Amino acid sequence: MSYSIFVRDLAHDHGRAPLLLAYDIQDRSLAASLVSVIATSYRDHGFNPATRVHWFRAEGSVHEIYTWPQA
Image (tube, rainbow, N blue to C red; front, side, top):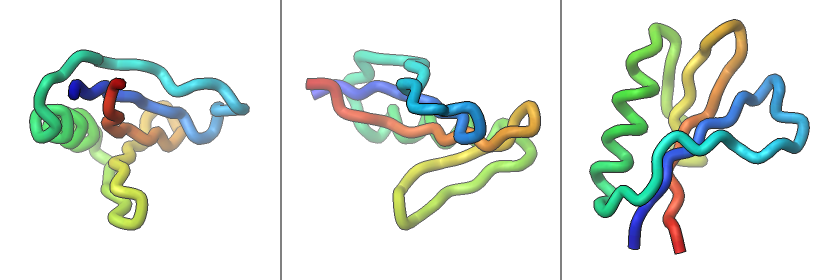
């Protein structure tokens, strides 16, 4: 199984599909690590343990960033 990384702008989502940042990552822990590194590169960031999704604030809007398995 491989994994993708997606990001979604919560303020400007309006039903649009999330933006694909990376795909075909063969290791789940590597994909999760990349997500964490990207989120923490922003000054205002966090992790929602209920949804297991990282978030960050950029350009005045909150973005979610997460991994998803590829079929």
